[in-house]
Image (tube, rainbow, N blue to C red; front, side, top):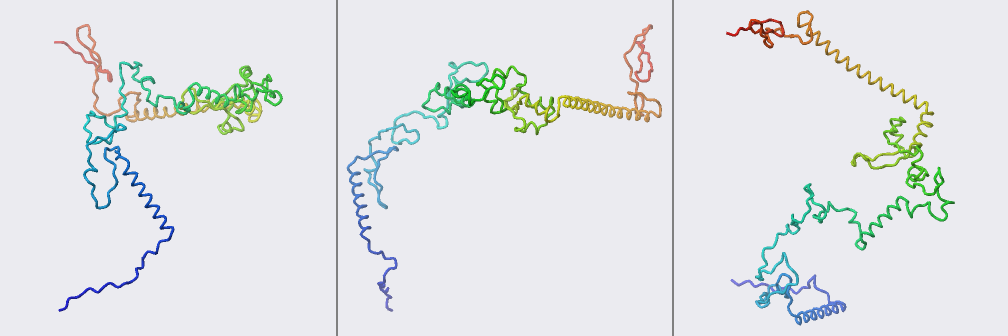
Amino acid sequence: MERQVTPPQRATARPNARSPQTPEEESRLKAKAIRERSIAEETSSQPASRISAGYLASESPAAGQKRNHASISNSEKATRTEDLKTNRDARDTTNEGILPARKFKKYVDHDFSKMTDTKGGFLNTDDDPFNKAMQNPNKDDKPSHMTLKEWERHQLLKNLRRRKEGPFEPGLGLGAKERGKKCTDCGSLEIDWTWDEVFNVQVCQSCKGKDEKYTLLTKTACKEDYMLTDPELKDIDLLPHMSKPNPHKSHWHDMNLFLKFQVEEYAIKTKWGSEEAMDAEFEKRKADQAKQKMKKFKKGVMELKKKTMGESLRRKYQAGGKTAQFGDRIDDGKHVHTYGVGLEGDDGATVRTCTECGMEIVEYLM
């Protein structure tokens, strides 16, 4: 039997055969080879450098090729350029002591002998300077190039500009008399610009304290004295108001302050027509409140009377139609005498009386 022989491969053109390189590709490959050759020469001319982990920096070996022993072992110790906390050379046998754990790096050890005794169990800003909760949040907004004095001056000018006071007051200037706003009472140019912006009223600081019409009223006073409703007080176009923090509790809602003459002008002239009509309405509402209060009181008395009458009728029915008094026993069980305190008689005997039926017993001491 003849041995089978593998037929020779057919010489066929590969479908993925590479096309001949263009002149641009040849020049790019030549430039790459020249660049790699120059890098290899520079690497061989420089001494071997040490990386931070303590190992020798060497070229990556080719795939399947092992590095020689001389390239990976060296008895010289690496010179440290920085204090390595987490990545240390295992061959360095220098005794560094026990290093602290990473989570205790920010631990602050307070010296109680140098701390201030506040008598309250808390630390002040001098003893605990790293506590951000005790620091002023505005200090974080201070630019680094400004000193604290310059920053305070900047904040002062910012507040004056917002309140339109001091050098930023619009009433001061060369042409302020002709085009500026004046106080309606004395004609002064130094008016309160906050009131001008909120209430649209031009008045100076001195005139505000002289006249009673510039008094600020709270929302509660407007509702009780002038009988205004919440929709009327919330309408800014109708009655403008100024908001200020509540002096009683800081977490309560802000106070709404209204100008007295504006409230009176709307309440008397627009809503009620005259002051007499407003007073008549006030007296009427006051009388209605008194009537409602009396009606509520009488209703409570009637309910109490019904309960008392029902209890009396029930006692009378259970007593068999006899006249019963409040506090009488209403059960049909056997009577149990309840004797009071014994009284000693002339003959030396002790007399005790039942508190319910009046039965008396005499006790003799033998």
